[in-house]
Image 1: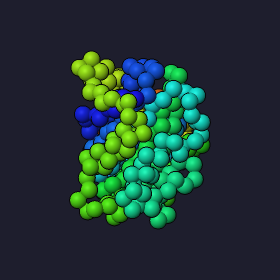
Image 2: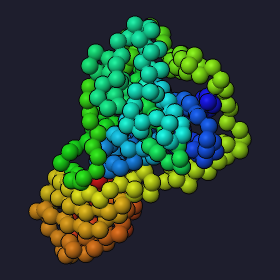
Image 3: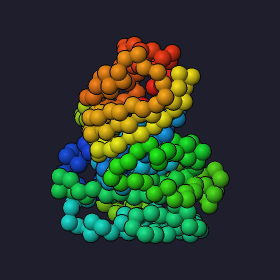
Image 4: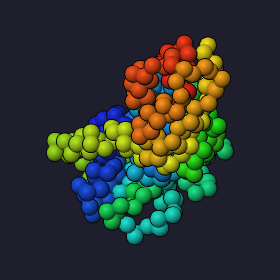
Length: 327
């Protein structure tokens, strides 16, 4: 087994590293640890926009990254430790999460924390979740990864993942916003993610005495950054990969009431309808037609609304006043 401690807190880099390591080490077992600066990690089969509070996320400059595995959306920050096990496919029951959560439970239980695995893939203490886990099979290997909430900013977590459920209608997997807690309430108050990382590494070494520490080479770093730039930083992967969904939102501005309905497929608007009690000098259908084929993305829609004569469609209104109704 190779023990790898990521040198980066960039979520794009760390999520890319999980995919890179699958092909870099096609047969070796790997135990990867990383800590991300504020970021939201979306499950592969989820509708990103339906999982995040986009305005809040943008204002706080929180990265949004889609991972390879399914499951729900999670929030990461510097108070959260992430672990990832890579093993050959077929060595373990794919639906059994207990094998690779056992080291986490043992190190906590040895320190008096009554942590348990409950349900399919969650670790709880006193009925509150502190770790969610997910799996995937790819390139002949199985990856199980999870989070450990140590001292995460719960207020930010709550706001970043607060979504208006009336805005989106789709069949994508939705996250279960159960009660969560930080382990800092159960461990010494000066415990850090670095300390937790050392404890977990020691636990892994106690059951895998032949494990070796591996430091990413310059070649590895270049490979990960290439994948990061070509895939994990892109709108196409993080937002455009989302399943088909219907979007609906309404706002009241000085020019009147405006309601927008959009059908979105792979991040692109396929159908648009705009309703309201505004006064239009030009047929609103002309604006609806210009929305077709556009990304359901703030930057692209802001550019469109800045280029069209909005007063002809809505009366006295600015692009900034109505942009939010489309997102």
